Length: 256
Image 1 (cartoon, rainbow, N blue to C red):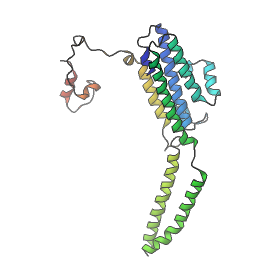
Image 2 (image 1 turned 90 degrees about the vertical axis):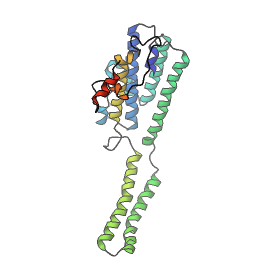
Image 3 (image 1 turned 180 degrees about the horizontal axis):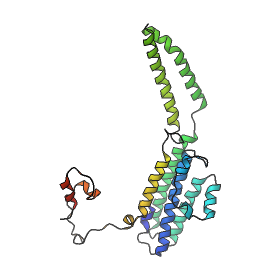
Image 4 (image 1 turned 120 degrees about the vertical axis):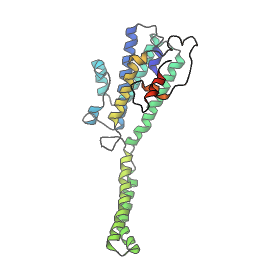
């Protein structure tokens, strides 16, 4: 992503750190705004209170008011993200060729396109004539089914069970389709946008950690093309403290 492009920056460390934090905060804010708009959450929604945003209090009052007062939050934050990145490139914080920066713009642009496609699920409702026709057909089905079942059996209990099953299946599919028509929202059956935001924030915080800023390198004695490049069991990526059925398998990850 964009944070990997400043590793060779010659700008002051303070400027680089500010750039990293601002990009993380803008990205977290953009993700939260996109999710809340797809779920049609407003300021009075209880679920919106659980959508956490990184670095919101670090923005100045003018920035926070601009976000709160506009009805086009996604477009505004996306414009800020691009403008801030362009300014960082002009100041030398992003010391990379312009074509590489343009690829980053293209990637986030594709993400916004995907957001627009997902948002259409909540903005465009099923046409009213289709919905009313479906309801009338289901009502007619409820009236005709008992009469049709009498042709199959004369037992009252059997007729009741068959009628109940046929009518229940039809109406169950109808109500399931209503839930699927609006997958985002406040209901318990909807997609949990709070969990999605927490996952996005965790990914962003990982990019700020020391592990992410520390470039990978071989150990002493394995540099300058002297690596052994032997295959190692995959459980070595979980470290020596990970649970394993075979205690000897942990030792396979230790250097010889």
